[in-house]
Length: 240
Image 1 (tube, rainbow, N blue to C red):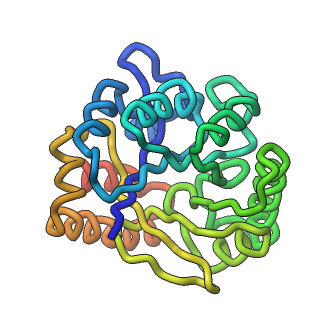
Image 2: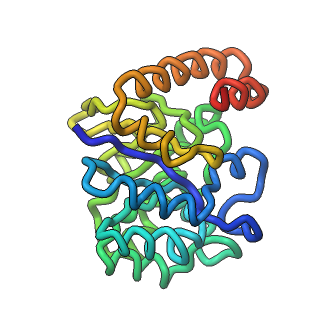
């Protein structure tokens, strides 16, 4: 049973310019020294380290720390932002892959609410992203993760039609499900205010993981009712 952790950008207290620059994104930016402490403490555990968005810190900070402890990451990239300020360059994506890290898609433009898009728009998000990554990596077997936790049957179906393989979600679970013969894999998000002890509890404690799952299910209900305005409740639930 692997526990799959979900990180975003790895930053310093004086420089958080990697990746998206908005209130929602900042709650996921983990300080570099805290991240290294977590990786060091988690050595030898049955874990998968994943990273969303595609910020340049994947290359400048996260990868080197992972490699220092003999670990490789799974980096999901929003392909529209490749070669733009704060995000990975094409060359950096290639180098990460050459070093043994796995590259996947985090959609093309990272829609705030994926489920609001039409089927055609969803298909374009995945199609563009798949074609860009395939061209960069010369690789067809690509995993993907869904932005902001907005998973649905249509979103997963269209990703599979475009050629993606494994599907990573934001649901905190260690149980891998199957959707049209493709693995659907849940993840446990790491926030900026979590300590190493907090992350160790996720990995070692079934009770902690159950608590996270219950919070996630509650937030999904709230999300369905309130839509975009649920962020305030989300922050309160996750940080308490």
